[in-house]
Every structure is written in C-alpha cells, then in structure tokens.
Length: 130
Image 1 (tube, rainbow, N blue to C red):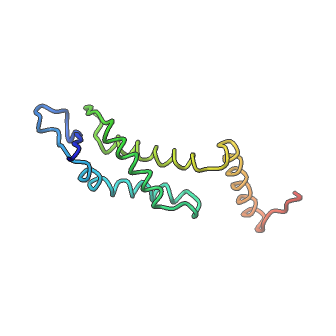
Image 2: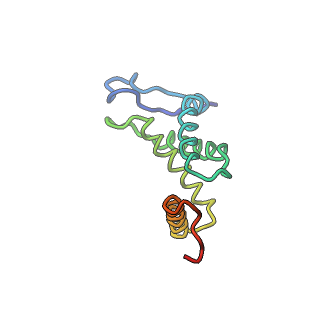
Image 3: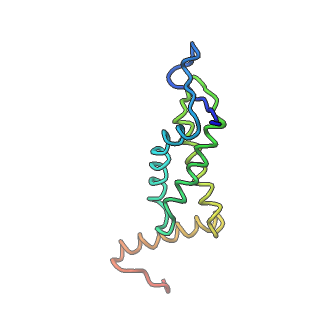
C-alpha cells in the first residue's frame, strides 16, 4: 500500500489538477537531491568528523516531516517549505549530538576567531601567556 502525499505545484489551484499526488518512494526520490545539497552545504561549516550520511539521513526525516505537514498556500511552494524543514532537522540533530552547551560552543568559536586574527596580525601562533 502506497501512502499518498499531496503538494501544490504552480499557482493557487483552480481545478483539482493543480495538485499532484506522489507516493512516498517517489516523493523521496524526487527530493533527495535537495536533501543532499542542503546536507553538503551544512557539512562544509561543520568539523570533518561529522559524517555526511548522517546529515542526509536527518535531512530525510525533515523531508518526511515536510511531506506530512505541508498545506498548500498561495505564496509558499513545497520546495521552499521542505528546505526549511530539512535544514531544521539537520541543525536539530547537530545540536542533539553536540556535547557542549550552546553558550560554551559560542565562546569556543569566538576564541578560535580571535586566535586566527592574532595569528594573521602577529605572523605566528599567539603565546598562552599573553
């Protein structure tokens, strides 16, 4: 039994043909490139120990959530809605798997930026004593 998901294509519907029904496998296959593109964009800003496959899997959960929750609106097509849900699912998974609280992570990022700035200014790695 195939599940049917409906999403709007084009402008607000005037006839029932403005909606296209897709089964779950077809919807995933259709939008998998979008999920992968978003996962690679996010992975480029993460440490190298984060697996891209994990990000894609979390993105697929976001896609499934988008397929279930999407309600057609005149100014919101499915791909825009799905992109937001996919990105959110990936970021939520990254936050769940992070061992540091957010404020400590922000402090660490600020420290790394300052260190890089000092390295460029001084031409060497800054000393811990200064």
